Image (tube, rainbow, N blue to C red; front, top):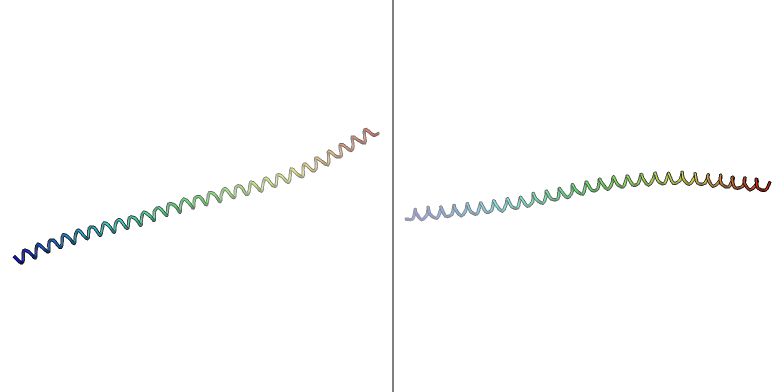
Length: 101
């Protein structure tokens, strides 16, 4: 009987050891999956932020160049306006001289 009890206890111990090992393996896999999931999520967020930074950088460069070109066009328009004013003053002065004579 003693040998049968020993074999029964050994079987019970092996079954319990296998159950504990399976539970531990499942917990380890769940923990590892959680870590992988967090890594994937952070990788996706970092990728989205990198794309956003690149897009915003492109938009800022576009707006800076547009601002530069608009300022250059404004200076040309101011110079043209000054020339038109000078021509208008000359035309008014010439007309007034023509009326006086």
